[in-house]
Length: 176
Image (cartoon, rainbow, N blue to C red):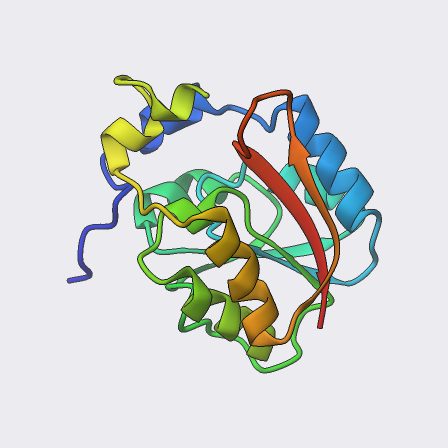
């Protein structure tokens, strides 16, 4: 039997908490990823909230997540799904033309290891929010950026979304 993932037991609540991508995240996907005709990996796809936009942009989407409960919700999307940790992806090298990961960096203990694997082959913080329910791993912004650079990714564009005084949501475009 597989171990319980952080989001197991929270999928129904999460769907209500985050039924769709906010407009600023949709805008970031449109600007930084853009339309595509190839395969896009949604790493840590959860309920598949980003998949609709990725499909709308023309991508063929494959999603991975460690939570079977979250994947059961994502099955409503037209995407290939796999239960797998981000540091042990079940794909051949060079299987994707693009990859996205939305909010996953706070849900894992070793984000640089997950980036290495990918390279090779507001309300969330309140007492009733996402982090109170599933926890989080703090990754300072400098280490977050350095993890991309250390794997060999070239950062083409980096943006902070929203109007907060600290980098609450960031979006990057990287090339291999």
